[in-house]
Image (cartoon, rainbow, N blue to C red; front, side, top):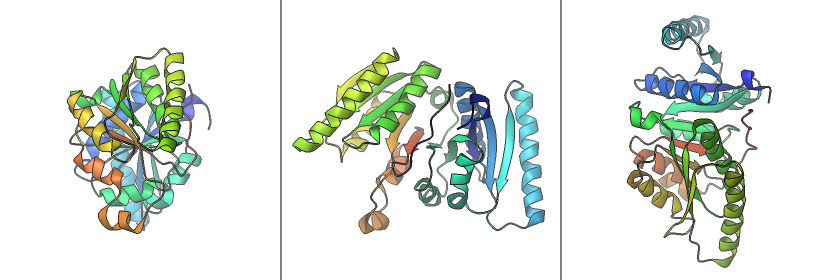
Length: 271
């Protein structure tokens, strides 16, 4: 990755009814992490005239944003192909560090997440409560990807002074217990070293039911961000009944959900 000024917070602009909510949250992320805000549209198979129309629309949105956010660097990006086809290029060639998007056409977006090296932040409402991002809930199970999810929890703690609740899985299997404890030890060391406001709690459930307990706890604690990994090994049953992260996002109400892909090496936020 390049230096801080060149990293970008991307907002997926599909011109859906909820797109403006994504832009509001994207601007909030750009402000928290002091990054450039970039409005991104995947053109699919649009022709030249349609591409020009999209670019014109994005330019008009940027003009309005700059009036309200004069100190923020804002740009736009259009690429041929669908989101799934372009997300790696967005990260590797255009220095994206995070993609903000709404939950409309969720199946299509979750499919793109499976090939993404950057997290997807799914948002649903632009109320003040869910724009603070100051109360983060981080469920931790036995998977190695927990180190990546904890890094993003640490970013919110460092740059936004967010409090973090770490909810550790209560696994019965001895091997999973050891792996979970190892993850928790790493996260404890990381977050305490950064002097963050962090609380460790033990869940009632094991790793496989942990995301649902975390979601319920997020509501109880009035959290405004839940951080979870997406699925790594996808079975035929998952494809038939839906991936766990899809169900969590659908059931999350207005709570923003940050999903991290365990199948890709994650890009690191530059200070």
